[in-house]
Picture 1 (cartoon, rainbow, N blue to C red):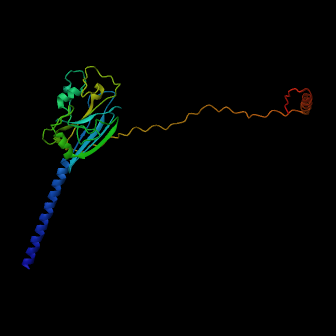
Picture 2: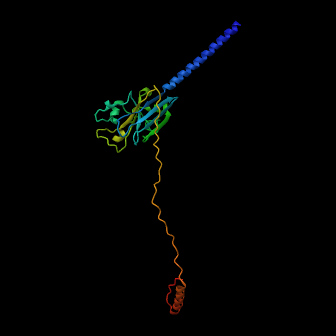
Picture 3: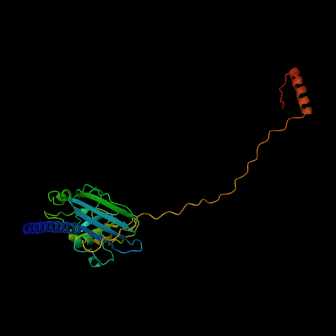
Length: 278
């Protein structure tokens, strides 16, 4: 009897240890997954009456899948070059070295360096996306193998003049920012604004920046769909002009018919031309 009670006690102890071990493992896995999710809210750069950008960025790196979402609105109707930089915080107006009231692309590079990942149509390498960027209000959603992308980021043998390399280290997720560039081509930009990477001053001008973090709550995505167009109401036009039906000419009376017959007989004798109406 005592032996049976002891056996039951040992068995229950082993089961409880197994459950606690499994629960601890799940907690560690969930914590690790949560720490692999980074997000940030965009704040305006070079605030203007023309644009007042809003948006969020969400980045996950779980099981070799690098997944990034950028949702932005009110960032002007232009092509928006967007890129990830390695920095602890976004550039502020202390980065305005020439004191012209605007932070241009050159001043951004002085503050945070060149971009590390261009957020274009293909993230596998720094050049495979060919600079294809979104336009206007947009939702950007791309996935790529992290190991493949990291291999290109660490390839210092084939550098690119527009981007920096990691030089053998991992991507520092806790020290990343995302910057959105680009205003319409007809926007008047002062001559003091410097252009970068062979682009125009308008395309090089930053409009928004977000600092990535894995702390706090994940922000909601803004609605980036275009506003609904009002229903088209057809305007009443002028009243149609009534058409008057055509009526056949009246049939000649008996007097005209008799005269025409006599003229035909007379012309047959005299060989003249007739012009009969009957």
